[in-house]
Amino acid sequence: MDLRFIQSGQRASLNRQRRPADTVHNGLDGQEVLRRKEVSPVHCSENGAILKILTGCRWLLLFTLLEGIQSRAVDPVRNTAPELATPPQDSAGSPRDPAAIFREGKQAMQSGELAQAEEDFRQVIALDPKSGAAHVNLGVTYMREKRWDDALAELRKAETLSPHEAGILLNIGLVYYRKNDFSSAIEPFSADLRQEPDSLQARYLLGLCYFFTNKFGEALDTLAPLWDKESAKLNYLYVLSIAASKSSNASLQKRAFDQMLVVGQNTPEFHLYLGKAWLAEGDTGRALDEFNAAASARPDMPLVHYFLGRTYLERHVYSQAETELQRDAAIEPDFAYDYEDLGALYVLLSQPEKAEPFFRKAIERNDTLVNSYFGLAKLYLDGARYKEALEMLDHALALAPTSASVHFTRGQVLKHLGQSAKADREFQASARLFKSFNDRLQQDHSGDRSADAQDAAQE
Image 1 (cartoon, rainbow, N blue to C red):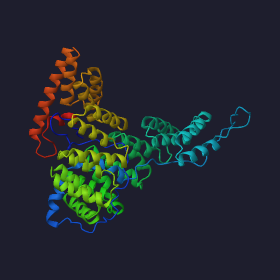
Image 2: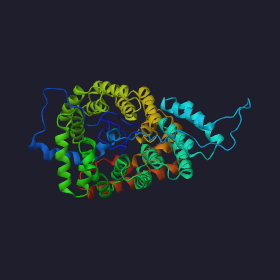
Image 3: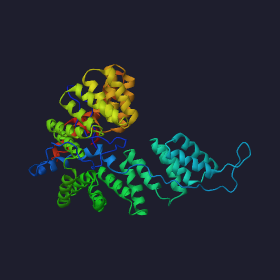
Image 4: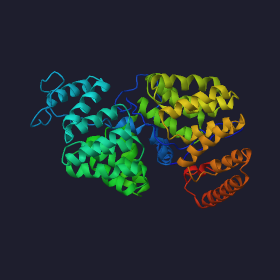
């Protein structure tokens, strides 16, 4: 996946491919019927063009697929915890019952009292370190708090203690998935599917992981068996049609797309998909029409105001872009890209004092956002805050080691810091990466790459 960095000049890099955010967006399940009376249907003569646009824009999925699947943590909560042969005594000398504490933790977790749940499950583990049930439920508690590394540690302990416990492998896969580490998620999802062959969630998530790691044949083989259960859902059909296209399965591609038109016709979700497709093609007029149709039907739909904001940014209508991005942030306050694009907007408006806190907010919500680190680095470079700029560039370089832009800007900062030899090495690395990217661009006739040297970030 590709990340384009913020440009100097008169435009924000809006048509960049992005990593998915680490939040689950609810509501885009393709089921709600559009309430507007005057809606222009998709005519048959347009279908071929629309199919080409949608299947050529695989990155559009990254913003909307998470909400289309049941990607919440599975709660393998037992009603009882293993009893100790000799229950420990509390300070008053009475027995402490780990099963009772476990039940209290279960109730606290189900009530959303996550701090209390964590305390209870930790008490059970202190009494019985080999309680797989306590470790797995502590892991689920951490998942609900988005403490992914802590969750993974507990779930791995639970897997060792209870290797055949249902749900543990699925939750391990979910942690990797929510960390956007799709390659690492494949193994636990595959293992869970072997344990539970009828698990729709494991199969769906496994198919998406294959998809996002460009294993389109495996994605198609994994997702196609879900047709009978999922073919009434827009997200599933969208993935399947693109996986079929990438696997040269023209018949299944057409079948999935035709079903998309049947399922999605005149729904706000389909308007959102089409708007994103037109935006990717650079047709901001049609994009606005589709996004406004979606927003009119469902004003609180996640992402519709975000994409309206991006479209207005593309058209340089900055006041409306700001309004729409802020609206989306109010609807889904954990969606990091709202804050990143607001930061980019304020850079364009030469308001660095506003841009900086928004880049910071973006990173607080998703610490893998290369654009935000790079945006801060540029602000600090312009403000002669060179040590802070270098710190941000170090983060960016760790996430995008083959970015010509990061290396070049790092060279600039190092030169200001008097480290000329290191600066020269960065400039040389940037030149090599720039040439390598352009060489590949000349050989790529698929139209999937944008002719911009910044796209070297994740190539």
